[in-house]
Image (cartoon, helix red, strand yellow):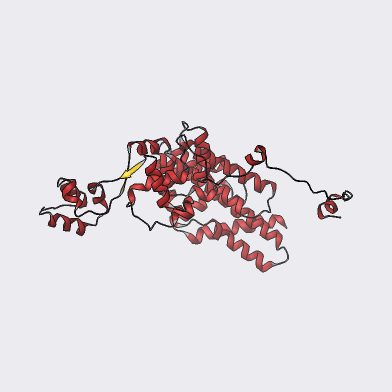
Length: 375
């Protein structure tokens, strides 16, 4: 009896005599054969995300560049940057730039050296010197500027304007949506379906979807570990910072960030504490350590304090009003646990004030109170 049959209580069907059958390839079979292509979905022009990334970065590289940064491969799965750049040139999206275009890639001493060779007296910052050298003309500069850089064509510029989400993933943000499963590929898929939809709406909706997905996962199985609760909380943080980045509603940004803190205290760290305490019910020493670790899991790190104080400053409220705002948001989170809304607000205020002893004392006191109910 096979493994599946034994698990489901079914008997194996009697074995039949094997008959060799010759199957000829048909068009239907061929259509099921996977074809190798770049990752993601092509846009209206036929470019994939990795090609759009290289298009966006093209002007940073010379036409003979062979040393490309590793992140192009491990972040955007670009295995052969020179080949993609040549392909973009063939498609008329980039072209070889002029000697003047290449000046920006020279260091200040090199620019001054070119100016000296041309008998030009230059002064000021790098941008000023490039401007002064540009007046010498293409022919004069060509004898000193041998390397050329890539330059976007009008078509290339329009292509990037049509895919604004690419630049978002190349920019630096105070958060990283990739950590919670929102990446250039998932946004690409949705953007290609509805290219007129604002890409930031797509990103925000995907953050919200990932949060709900994580919530369902740990609700179905509270003992599944901390990965789901961590993702659930981080989605709140990222949505808050995402809205703050837009600069439209600091009230909503702060509200989401406050809920992040409350969920981190009660769901992420709270569930870990209760699960550990139940799991090691016969190990008093380990249970005591779990109570101490509860504070370690909810304390505010420097980046938390920076983000939180910045949001409070943007709201233009004092400490008392900040505490009240937190309590209001904590109630909206609708997730009680180790700490009540008021207790969590006090904990955060202690942390922001640098009163680590007070916040640790409060955390351990409430943790002991919570686990006492288990026994």
